[in-house]
Image (cartoon, rainbow, N blue to C red; front, side):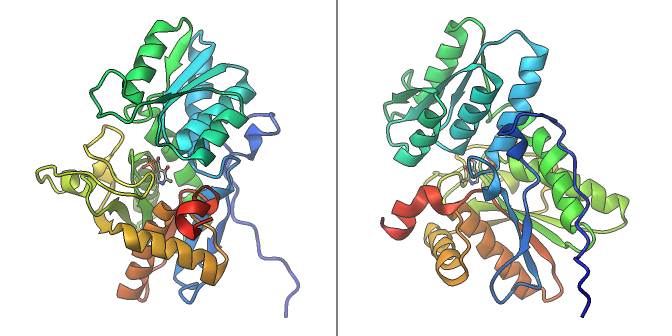
Length: 324
Ligand SMILES: Cc1ncc(COP(=O)(O)O)c(C=O)c1O
């Protein structure tokens, strides 16, 4: 047996080079074989290996560095109940700008923990409907307008969100699996992650004379699939953080998505639990939903080589996943 180590996949340079010891931990995440029976057919891109344990570190890094280079700002504002808030808090901390975050009162303590840990000024807002002036997104907009030197990240509308994944995440995935992958599968919220990565993979595959199917994963009662198929929008209701949306957003680049599948909340949580308990892979429920679709595809198409993105780690969901 050869003792030669396997050649490392081509490393992809970050489009946002930095000599900061913390920020340089963002990106260049590993891709591993799924540690269950389908290991030959499914691979997992571990975005949970970013410093705040999600792929949102990349968009915070990209959007903040670029906006600060282009304009005279000293404060960053964002509305987020999820991973983006912690990521923005970390990157703002390292870039030396003030950070103001708004989130709904129902935001989990661990997510607020990330925001406060890095020194952000966190405003919790009442859980009111979008459109209400005290809604967390309206509050962020107001704060950004009223604060001199402030800019709003605005991940739901900022084209920097999918573009960062086009320039960065998608390139890494192609370098790690482009020679064999047949499918790319990811959960969608703003759609930024899959739109950008999917566009990169589609273009690279075309240039190589190959075909990769880009599959978006939505919640069961959500409107990304509905909008994708051009159907009338219905209600939006899911317990899976980060999965699905009530409306179509400009960060969803449907031209680069081939197929949408919806996953019930129970299945998303079941798969995330099984990944940890049976295989030692600690992932969040939205990654559980994507993994569920990836495993289905691998069973439907025995020759498929599926890459699924693990959007975040399970550490923030110990309570909902394992009751602790
Ligand atoms: C846990 C989690 N999974 C998936 C997503 C979806 O990613 P995107 O917004 O890039 O579509 C998000 C986004 O907030 C998230 O926080």
